[in-house]
Length: 243
Image (tube, rainbow, N blue to C red; front, side, top):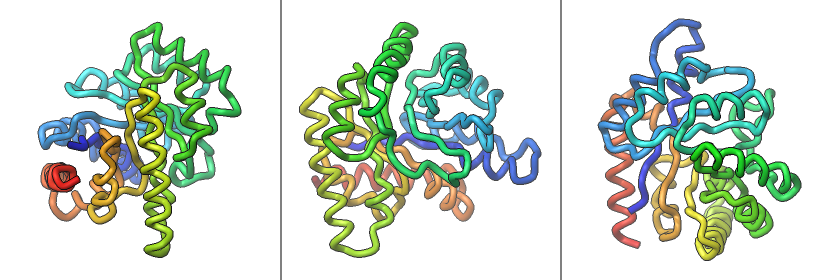
């Protein structure tokens, strides 16, 4: 069965809209875990637009499943990761002007750099994932760094404007997952996934986990976070069982 990791960034986004202390992403993480999440994801951006340093430190103390720290491969954030010691770091591209992550990381053009960083993380027993596009070049590069995991960018699939385009992107994801799995990589996926488009993603056996944030938090505004997480976990169980 595909498992669910919950991204709590958007809880912090709501908090920062008023510059206060509520809602608390750490409290959200605890609710998500109790509702069935197998991991908590947060992105410590350089501009600290949502998750902040205190959040990450407190999440490390509180999270009982798995803490996945999404991050740009900058010296400052790398130092924080080494201090905090999350279970997993996921390297993502980051631009200050973007609303959210816009695409996969180009590992192939920075292979030596990412290989060194991966080794540095492994020295501290931190697993490494790369958030990449579903293409052979980037998968080969990620495998070449020594990383254990890739997260396939599903944003293009999620934003498809026609059935034909959606099928094409789903096939790209399927082929990428099969290839990455053949190299011994754990395959996860994320970005733009919701309660509707998750079904075809569940048809790809090689995908072991999905990371979802925005859709869960949007649903939680009407149903509560516990119910929103449980609903998604139930869909993953249902659809994975049919593949």
